[in-house]
Image 1 (tube, rainbow, N blue to C red):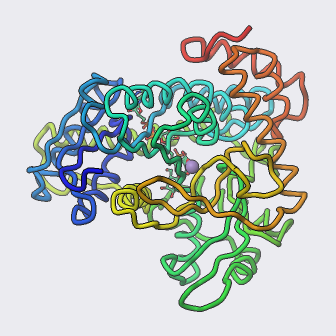
Image 2 (tube, rainbow, N blue to C red):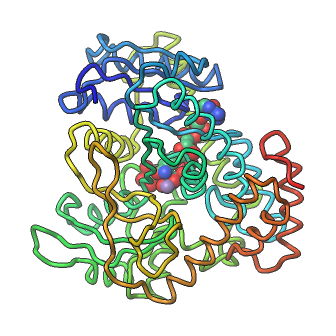
Length: 443
Ligand SMILES: NC(=O)c1ccc[n+]([C@@H]2O[C@H](COP(=O)([O-])OP(=O)(O)OC[C@H]3O[C@@H](n4cnc5c(N)ncnc54)[C@H](O)[C@@H]3O)[C@@H](O)[C@H]2O)c1
Ligand SMILES: O=P(O)(O)OC[C@H]1O[C@H](O[C@H]2[C@H](O)[C@@H](O)[C@@H](O)O[C@@H]2CO)[C@H](O)[C@@H](O)[C@@H]1O
Ligand SMILES: [Mn+2]
């Protein structure tokens, strides 16, 4: 693998996460020497806006020796590249809004990656990712793809079926974000932690958080603190009440099930009725994001266009960019750092089916991910929840590849946020109409 002069392509270059990722790369050039950055997107306006923002960032940080390209052409984007960072949102925020609002019409959870909203997003996203991975196989088959396009389990499962040998890691920043927020809030240093965790993506539990410096498992004391008082949103989510709501629900889960520390996304499966009651069906998370970071990114691009003075670049996505660069560096330098990754189970969780796409700790080197084994069975409560979710995800992916209405309906019915098959059918039929330009035809 090439060690210098790295070419990086960001698929979904127009995403609001691109500045944070680029900034993390620039802070780590000694470990990750990037000489060319390509922004690839299907939306010209967003890619152009991002080109201006990144060009400005390179100039104002004295990095204008790095070549920057923005393109809509897959051949230009993926030829000669070493790393691909993948962050598509197929259908954009407009379709996310529908994923959230249509289920709410039927009294069902409407969420980006969980419940039937997540399944709707999945049926759009799979095609987008198959496209990107296909281009990489065609133009730079040795490149490494770091994927964080959602919904991650569905993506990981689909890509494994079509490109089982692709150089690809699937990673989510939610565990990092939970850990970082807890550590900041309760006065720990996350860098000292070795975490044991298992689950599916956005659907898992910590079983131990060993602090190397304190020489003890700090999970029991964290659980105790969280049961008494929810953690506060960290600076990277500041002012974002919906993240505070998520942390509040995490404490609520812990007061019911205090043995293990859950991923906050389990709130949608444990409290679907409360979530629906608390959601404003006219103004969902997609609206908040459109009125928030999307608008803000557009404003930054326009300020650059207008040659405005002052500190134009203003964003904070916490550890998101750093996490991606750390993974890339661990591959490049074969340094076997530990990350939470979505991988085929193959015994990592001994009492769960071997072909489930699970999220567990893994060491990352030049040959990719080496997941750890739990070396213990997981409890029936978690196993039952995960098996139902995993079967639903498998059925959905089957439904995608087979064009099977019946399998997608089964997937929707099995989703634990859905109380009846009738509702599953109603919402599915509505989502089919809304997604006519994106989903495969279902027979
Ligand atoms: N796993 C994680 O930890 C994590 C964290 C944050 C965001 N995400 C995911 O990252 C993705 C981007 O999120 P966002 O909020 O920045 O979305 P966004 O809509 O702001 O940006 C996504 C970009 O992808 C582009 N795009 C859509 N389809 C494409 C295609 N087929 N080919 C190339 N580009 C395409 C869009 O035009 C847009 O510029 C989403 O899938 C989101 O769920 C994952
Ligand atoms: O509603 P959104 O689009 O703001 O967020 C949805 C994503 O949420 C998680 O990512 C968080 C991250 O954990 C947090 O630390 C901070 O950086 O915000 C991110 C999102 O803005 C989740 O892991 C993703 O999969 C979701 O797409
Ligand atoms: Mn995630």
